[in-house]
Length: 207
Ligand code: AMP
Image 1 (tube, rainbow, N blue to C red):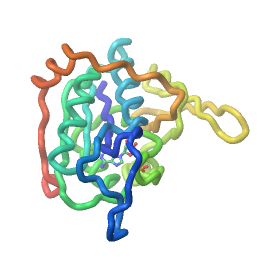
Image 2: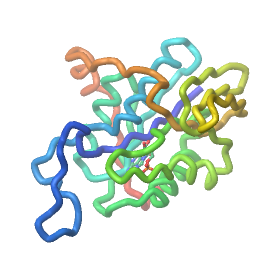
Image 3: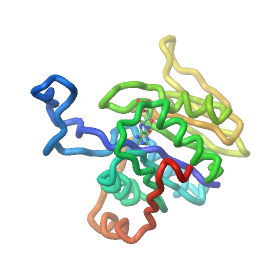
Image 4: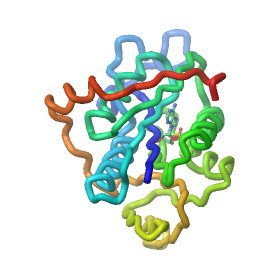
C-alpha cells in the first residue's frame, strides 16, 4: 500500500519573523526555511508504517517554488522513497494546494494521504479538510494515534471534550497533531542517501 505525504516549506519555527518595510507581507529574504513541523510528524508516521511492514511506498509531495526541492530532500532523508514537486511560483492558498493534491491523488491512487494539521506560516488548518472533501475521501484530523489494519485506519484524535476514536475505510485522509510521534533526527548518511532518491518535478498544468 502506498502513502502520500504532503509537506510544505515554511519559515523555520525558530526564526523571529519580520514584516516587509512596505507592510505587504513577511520578509523571507535570507531567512532559514524548513519543513513545516506538523509535516515532519506526517513523514515520520508514514515511514514508521513502512518500517512496521504495513506500507510499501512513501511518496512525499510539495507545491511551491524550485527551492522546495530541499524540503522534499529532507522528507527523503527521513525515509520517504520518492518525491514529487508540483512547481509553481504563484502564491498558493490552501484551496489551490488541495486541488493540486486531489489531482495527484487521482494519479497516484494512494491508500492513505497524511498532511500536517496546519502550516505554521499562515495557520490556515484547511488543506487536509478541503482535499478530503474534493476527493470524496473520509478524513480524520488532528490525529494523535494511527493504527492501520484490514483496509481500515483507526485514528485517535484530541477534541475539546477529551479523546475521540474514528474508524476510517481506506483510502482516507489524515492530518497530524503534535503528539502523534517525535520525528527522528536526520542523519548525515541518510541525507547522502536521499540525494540519490527520485525527485520528479511537474507543473500544475500537467495535473
Ligand atoms: P494549511 O491548511 O495551510 O494550514 O496546511 C495544512 C497542511 O496541508 C500542511 O501541514 C501540509 O501538510 C499541507 N500543505 C499546505 N500547503 C502545502 C504546500 N504548498 N505543499 C504541500 N503541502 C501543503
